[in-house]
Image 1 (cartoon, rainbow, N blue to C red):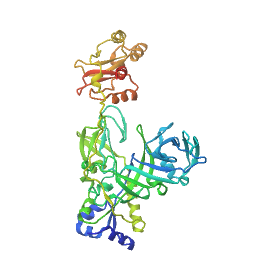
Image 2 (cartoon, rainbow, N blue to C red; image 1 turned 90 degrees about the vertical axis):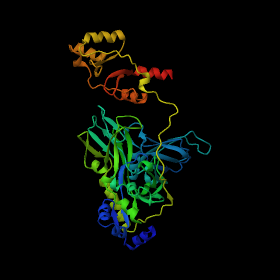
Image 3 (cartoon, rainbow, N blue to C red; image 1 turned 120 degrees about the vertical axis):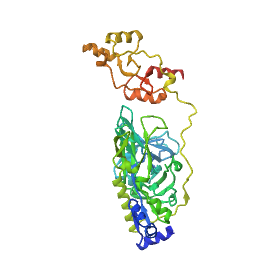
Length: 495
């Protein structure tokens, strides 16, 4: 048994033994008792996109003063409902003109890098704050305070993502190729901080950590903290002025949004054999699930359970087919974090701290309880669908479009399975190019929907692919309905 005070004294004397989390499994396996006796600290690390991040900023008062009602930094809006010249800039907030190209995470990186930032603010004006508008240029040095506060950091582990649909998906788990062609995953496995102390024996409120190149603190459990399911999180804070762009980076997630890559390292004091054993975990012992991200619902189907060892191998077999895996977190930077933290401790620049409050161990993430349910496609789709088959002539289909006053006709086979779709525009092109057969002009890769999908999901689909309708099929690809923009608009009018 050791105490944190005893380990801190060894740090002062220059005698503390520090190892990285990746080195601990072999040491513990060779001689558990000797390892507990001789190793004092295990350093852990992670570097990845942590969307629930941001900074509190104090700009100081202008003359005459202004009570900032709205404020923008490089045209990225920050939240101002705090005080006259305080604001909170969230990492995922978008630039008003540049969209996914630039956002809050990039502003934070630019501040840390010493770049000039354009500040623009407006107000309604009061007797004590008469100014209604201000615009200036500022740098980090001119801010009174710049405090990073991340409501959710350092998730214990993550689910992996795959896309079984026929179209590419842009998600917070990165770009997912269609037809199960890739698997994306996040987290650093056996070196991840919360994996090494899953029962929070040493990690808690007041624990000193490495945060983006500075010394920070854990200030509580993070949002969506769910230790019962193995997905614990922490809330963290630190001084942005002391941080380094080496361990903090604004990021664009293509087709999804912006974020901030955050580097966190937590030293785990080896106080007893139980803690030592936890830090000796290997990637083969850490299990997670590959989820179907083609299902846009909160409960995504599980495709397969895997270990982090499999994920880091670069490929996973699903139904006897090899699928490439890609990490979204950086192991290279995570190892640099562990080494930097180890160096700080060895040089006597970083001491351990006792937690002043334990993190909850029995909470579980709950989903939103919707009081007003969103309708599903099956409730509003047209069930009696006008269809054609491959043997029909282009002239017949053209006449049908005119007669029924519709813009598209699904093409089915003799089993009523969807094989394509033809629009009035396809007919126009066919006539101009002297085409004779439907299979020559129909769209074969049809964007389809399911009757249990919500209106919001299908509306997004119609907008994304710039189409006016989508056939509704069952699990055997049999046509059971069609949903159009008009159907959705009518539903909105009835509401």
